[in-house]
Length: 212
Figure (tube, rainbow, N blue to C red):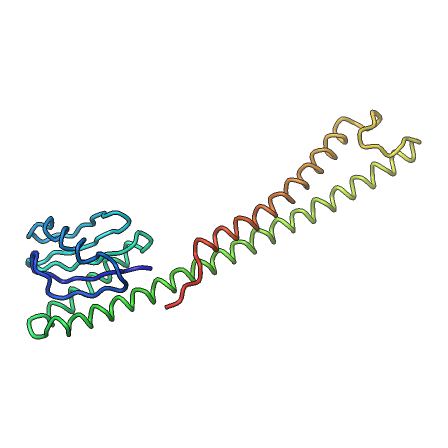
């Protein structure tokens, strides 16, 4: 959801309105119109789970009720568009005629909101693939380094007649720590990889695909 209810009013008197869905939007609007001063200004009110964004100019109030997921810059864009249309249309059209203008703007906002979510979903997928690709590249290099190091140590131990045991006391302190730390890092990156899958699912759930 994005813009749920749109109103153009002169003081407390509603000139045109349109609701995208059912709700007590008219009651909420009437309560808040009484709070808006007649001076030119723009402000945001919070009312329960809703946000009310408005612009007041020349005693005409242009107000939208929205959920709090909508982008702030787009709020102002839609309000300014309604204000621009209302300034030329309202003196000559009926409430029902301008309500259709509000309906068109609400439909436009929902189209933007759907694209906004889809854009973030694509970004999440791209970020996930970039991170996992980097992790797999690093882990592949790490595994290769561990393999080479183990081969070198095994060869040295065989030449010295020592059993192939990474914890053997005949190994140098540096070699023992290298093997232990490398193996630990490899296990850690495996955990991070599976954790990234969970994060990916979480992010995509926050930006689900929406229909117009």
